[in-house]
Image (cartoon, rainbow, N blue to C red):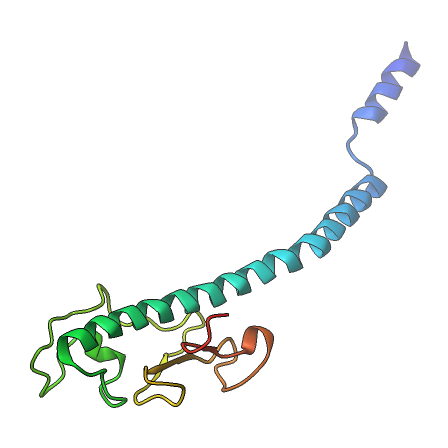
Length: 147
């Protein structure tokens, strides 16, 4: 009887150091395999959000042009979609329901009109690095490419 009690006590003492290390190793391997995939999804979501915002700006700019006959100048910028610029008579805005957002990385969108890539304005997000050019997540997201 005494030996059965002692054996039960030993079994109830808790987990051993080896068991704990095995569990931590499994958790570490799981995190090493899953975390990079989850992080890349966040980057993809930011790129998608920037493209969606640029598309929303383009739609609002089209409505602005229908009302006024011209796109806002570079100096007037995207702010002309929210507040009436001076000397613009047919402005019927605001053309966006909220203030002009920054891109998903916290940088201001670049607006140029006349643009360098056609008859429409150029709208640019400089990507994660906030610098012109770049590759991958640091690549610029631009209005004249629909990738």
